[in-house]
Length: 433
Ligand code: AMP
Figure (cartoon, rainbow, N blue to C red):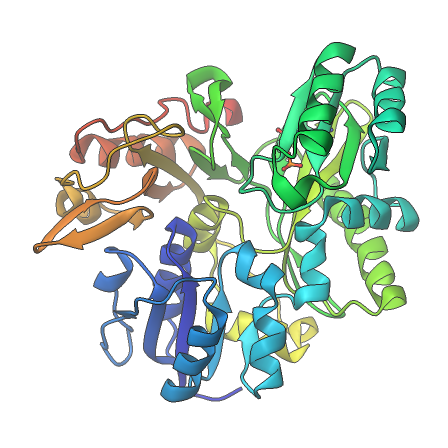
């Protein structure tokens, strides 16, 4: 790899702030840009050269402008955060133009961009998953849902801003969901095909594996909190908080689960000519009959990244570079023995409508606490002041010798921060005790 690198990070959320923060610590990073970034990202600087990270006003899906920018600045490595640019083929485009970029190409990104593709792949290569069927017409779909007693998850095939999954408890609910997605086009073209999975009960966790086309290196487990309110009540959100590690798989069980997923995954990719370089992030249900894959994502989780990266002891530039080069096999990924907790502070009204532009107070005080980092998600700089600019505003993250210490520290930091209408869950990591 090149000893010194100019980096471009694509995206603007908490995940991207965590990536920028960790990449900036690498002695390889000399100059960094983020498109479009946020107010927190723009306060970071490269550790070695003390160059401020510059945010550039280009959207994460504006591929031609991103390419032109990377060419103009002679970027050595572009790092893609969100799923959409991957599904649009940003990696293919950059590579065709001779630029190094980290993330799966369009074909490999199908693991996230098409649930039908993923489900078929899992079945073809024996990856443990829910009993499922894929459909494009309502009749057979309804018959299959009925065979499951109506207890199922009806999923739009394509990307639907994380909202394309309807959980059903009865045949009537399932029929309604099938009609809404297939005939009613609730998710537009993303719902031209659907996957129906049996409803799985158990504990849901996230796995991540860094892949380089041949090798896949598994991370520790983490757990997201999807619902807006304490006790897993309220509406589904992008994720209200995470912690890492979780107690739901022992070291041995994790290794076994990783093997059961990643071996067939790697074999299947080789058979189908899929060159997967990036993060494979399976959503897992730990059921009574073992862990099963609910879905695959093809990028870092948000807010999982916020609890993984504070524990990562490797140089992230070196890891991502090895993932691009196909040399991960030579690297051991090392994790600190600490636990990490991230509490998301959201705008009033989120996940529904919410106002923007509310001044955020207490950020400096919170960031000064030991073993704490406030990752920004929906924030912006307005007249020299940091204001809210999205639904999920901050990912207040802390780490410590165990989960309790990390949780106490994260909430101590949350207490320092206020903005009008702020809400957050008070039970992040509680399931881990
Ligand atoms: P997905 O985007 O496929 O992960 O689905 C979104 C959420 O729906 C997951 O995080 C689960 O909480 C839930 N879910 C998805 N599939 C199932 C299933 N087969 N059984 C139970 N819950 C599910």
